[in-house]
Length: 452
Image (cartoon, rainbow, N blue to C red):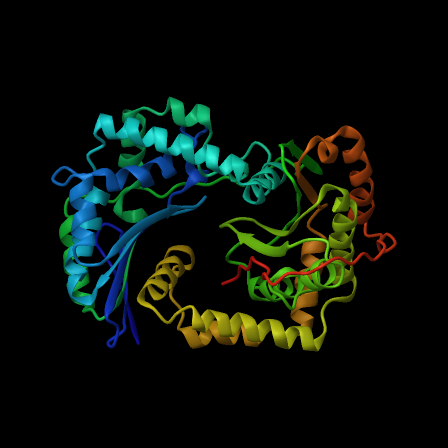
């Protein structure tokens, strides 16, 4: 497979991967602007834009865009993160021109019709309500607030009811004019395609678009909070423990991905085995890494019946301490590196996955490394590499705790009980291991993995 990159005059970059035997082609526009680039009164503007761009252009209505894609059996979607927003489509290989034309139009000439802005505002308000009801996700928003207080990284990508209600059509259009410029754009395509033809189509859509300026980002300077709790009616208590970790450019990021895989990245992980398999205390237990351009976080999380929370939290803390003190074994290293390399390779069998990889690699790292080199970076990680990155994370600051659940979990009495082991552990002392408890087990899998 051949990967080519072309830098256009206005600063946009085009990257393609030729997959000659693919029946599909995937293409997308990745914009290097996200939720952390919004002022407080514009919170949620990036996500609002993500919704609105598919609502119509100067020449096409929302239904015409949808019908054009579905008429050839394709699909079109988008997503927003704290640092970028992506619009992408997957179509039969013969329809690449259609995909590029649709994405080019929505990027450069969105209509922002007032009626559609108001209709989509209501959709997003419903999405916010849905997010509030999704406790297993909400606890991670609570943790982000604790780890990045008063900073956009601690804010939900969707914004708030107040900010979404206050955003005007002109606010959103101005945000688009400011940031949706060639210098912040990566166009990616993968499948049976010709690179030069893709470049020609993109150049046509960006003609006269100028250059623009990239966002300037500020690090969070406020110390993280030790604990943050949210009371909500729930049958379970949801807990997340976070540590300051590496940014997405750090040379040790692959070693941290290995450490995370050992801790809670899969069914062979320590947290899954200790909390679920051996004791039956939780169905959902996992860990993950979130890496941004200038910071990161390492998170361990679980959901359990409220009376079990002290034991589950204690076990999470014990496993973190054990990893920081003793590192990982050679066998754990072999399993983790094998999983990371193998799952990465398996995920790149279709055009959509390949498109996503080359787009985010170019946008985030400024280059696209060959797949064999990426896999080799995981395989080259050693036990000593993991020990080094664990020492860095352990020394980066105290742990933050987020809780979501009924009043029995979030009452001041309960929080003071849970906070004592958290404070002790943050000073490097391990408590006694909680008592063993066994109940029935199921057949689900752990979730959560990150690492490039």
